[in-house]
Image (cartoon, rainbow, N blue to C red; front, side, top):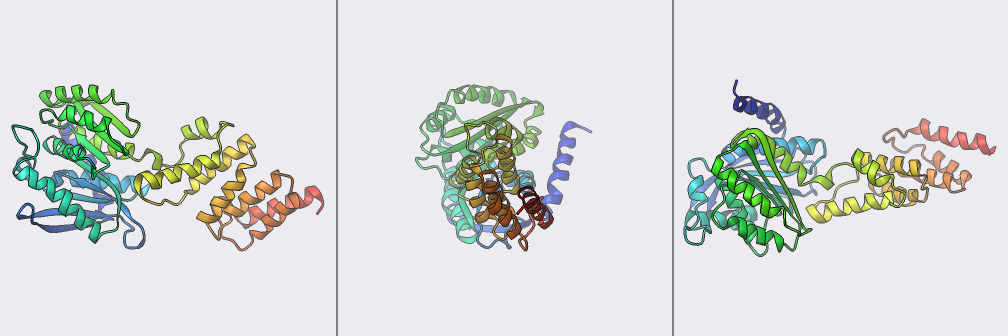
Length: 385
């Protein structure tokens, strides 16, 4: 079996069962800009119908006839484990017409004819309809491969780009595109995520230009630009896609992921750092960057809890229990943190009563009624109350 066949089987194994549990829609879109009807695929998040108030980032996938399934599968997989937010994935089928869709002028190398119309179709029609029909958040990613990877970059050249994330899979760069993009990213005034990939066995001419472009992008000093480049060993122009898609998606949502062991050891255990403030800022940044409100995960609460216990910085519990009450009302989480605060800051009797007040509240993580009453009884025994 060839490496390419093994890769395709792997992608099918990963994506098909997962995509099957999400909502896949096949729609015909009548475009006035193009003067024709286009076929699109839409994957809605698993819990779209349950969470009526929730809004979702949008991923637009060009070459949807072959790129949609792997992108949709990986988005669903990562979001299942809460490493990225749930997202609406939209694939635009371009089988047989991708060259026309991505055409550019031989004079100024900007979209022309069908390419200019296709550019407006995405920016002025498709996204507008998605915003009207679905609960979209104001964070968008666009994905393309060779011709279409070059095409997605034209949106970045606009004064106010409508996409924040760009996934370039072995882009077939138009003349002047590298210089134009370098200038655009250097002058970006809002956060942008830019990903580009090639492979050791990529098409030689494409790879040469990609590596040259990478050397330019490495020198960008704009802190608002998050740039990641990968050159996959032993991967071809087609097989690199299977490795690049999950890497690109995860890199754009690094701050969204649960607090890692690295963050715990290198940040939370430093006595000069406020763990509770770190937690609050992490989730504030998620809302600011991606336009979505995320409930603080139990994993992250527990990481901060362990850091406080380790550093014995008891005052940190004060803010932590307030956040716990806000995010998990009716559970024992906030009650436990509040009791620990009082217990370690010289108020054992008050702590004992707070532990006892947990009776009837909902269990969460390792914190249950028996655990809380045992903590109360331990104080009662130690102090003779």
